[in-house]
Image (cartoon, rainbow, N blue to C red; front, side, top):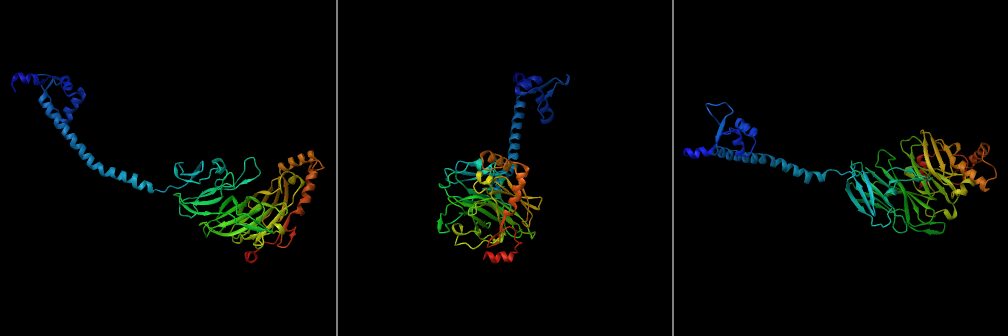
Length: 444
């Protein structure tokens, strides 16, 4: 390179060097320090006077680019296995992670099952145009609850529960339509993945008196019960004939097989479980009405002897059923107040108070309180009954005005009218507690 060309090739300040490279002065100064940028200094000048040749800068910049390319390749070489593992996790491992049902939605005819983050896991289309809506099922989800503004108990129609005790939740879903004549009522059990484990069809054709009733039943509700801690839980399903009085109480195992069934000639409004005799196994308490006697009733059964039929005669008795093996079958007296407002004034709620009192409430607002030997201890009146009494007086249904004295007379009259079935007749004293062997003999 001659002197004239060298003069054109030289850059004599940090500004010229920075402009030539296309970076700021600070970056170029850092490169001189860290990356050996080819910058020279005038011997007879201060440190700040620098110069460099374009040719040297071009060669340095080319070497820098090649080095960075090699570094990127080296980085990608080590990063590739990590990326591969991430992809394996995303596409192979993650789909196999448990997706445990926790919640649900109803969308038209579809049941949509969600995880605890309310993300959809799976859905099932019932193909029912009139499937009950989400608000309805929320009132029947997991637990029984008192109906809002209603004197009735809403029993579960959908439950998410680990039925098989394997850490994965099953979904129990009672398919229920607005029009029970349009679609049959069925109880489905789905696996955590949405596979149908089993389907239970309630009811069957039954003869009561001399009449045969249809096999169309609607599921009123169900409860999962762990009667005996040493065996898998069982499912108690209450189902009503859609036309008339027969009510089936079915006990299923966790595979959906019908183990036992009990029939009541009247609707069941509420169910509860409690170990009344402290033998480690809960008893079944059911409340409702008995159509033959036009009265509310309480039925108490040992879970292993849920069989036969309620104590009936004539038109309300099924010739195909043996006599039921009830621990207790109790009828409650009707009143002019209850009969004027409710058909048969059924018992609609059972409560266990402080682990020692069984409280029974009728729709008219009568409370009957028993100890665990079913000795009647008290009869009380809810505000509902007192309001109905005042209305009945205004309508001329009763002749005496409401007063504490009148209520005391009503209470005295009702006590002996609570009746217990002894298997042959109705008596006014509770039965002695039956042991399991005698219940078994009676059930068979």
